[in-house]
Image 1: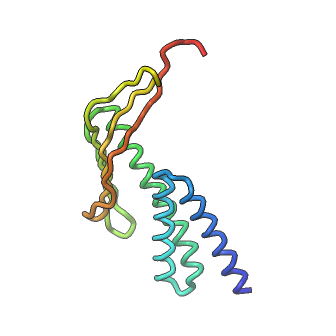
Image 2: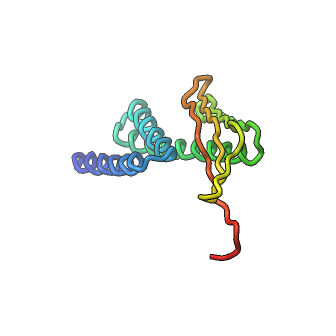
Image 3: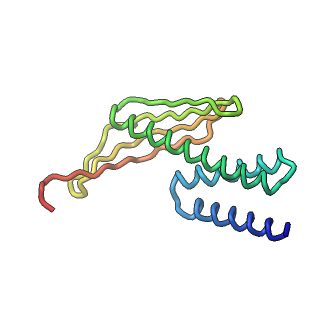
Length: 148
């Protein structure tokens, strides 16, 4: 019976991490990283390692998704307001996470593709340590006529 539990838990984690990692988006990276870290912590701090892996993995995935949503909100607000935006939160373990988004240059309009693009400098900081520091390009489509 224990062997069946191990197999089921392993299969669930493999499928979950596989789906998270195969699509190349920042969201899936955050969820996969959160899952892996949560599973590792869960296994390290509980007596029942498999239960710790599952619970830690689920909680880590939720935390990774929350960080992605905060990042997207900061990016969208920075582009809309054309000024730097920062969000900070306290984590359940007493630490803190911060997301900073700052527009870079002026928005560029491409009339052939009907897009308006803006580069944004995004930084994720956890407990004073820079986790991610990258420049992303955000593009919005627009419509010029009222016909389809």
